[in-house]
Length: 342
Image (tube, rainbow, N blue to C red; front, side, top):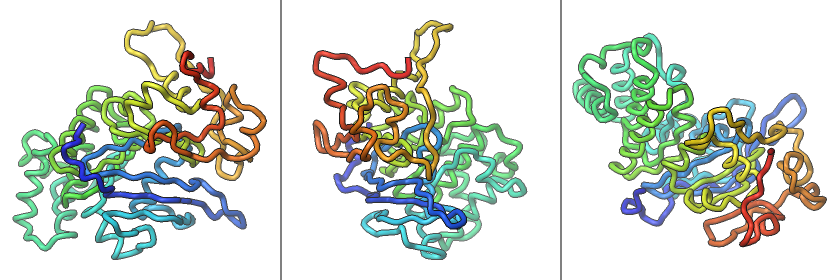
């Protein structure tokens, strides 16, 4: 990846992040004590099924949680705790030091403004530059994200562009003020596989060029294997495994991670071969089991697994962690990974 750009000091540090929602008289916890860090020039992928809290975590980083949500813990951006910032203080950071690419570009773009006008506005909102200078920078950004004929596209409206081109525009807007951290929340969900690869390759190239840190939110382990340096696996609002992408794919430790790896399609497999399924579904906030949240879906779970949520201790190296009481039992040195959901 891009080890030459790393400083060794995290540009983003998240510690004991907790997110809950107030619904009538009840407080429903959705994210439980999450912690991770990302260095400059590094890509951290946060993976898991829908409902695991990935996007909520992304929104919390940028202060975009809904009004009935409450977040606690610490989110340090370049050494500054930003979790409690509101209003103008947060707005000044959003776009300049931390930016976000949303899942669906049409929801992030104003349909009645040209793409050029929107990028110019993003630049001038944060920097004291003339309209002419902002236009010049916008054209440069459009070229940088590989949009052909930037002069002509500058005056186009979002509906005139393809999904891939719209996502490139959103990336250009996110990069307009050279953020230190780019949060990409399922940035290729609505795109075909060819365009997906182009967009992720583009983010990789820009990361290498600028040294920014990338937090990639996704459920696609194929993308993670190709583009991430490290991986954080989330389940039911908790981190269940963390480590380098290479180590995690070579020897996943948590039963949920193994199930995710086993469930992904493999190149060259028979067209009619049935994919491995993970039985059951992610429990919703407010209906968590008392022990490990994955225990009801895990064929390896025993009584202790159902009693207390397991901690997330280091295993192997300090950077590798797994929240499973039985991970050592499930994979002895001479055994292959447990196959779940078959």
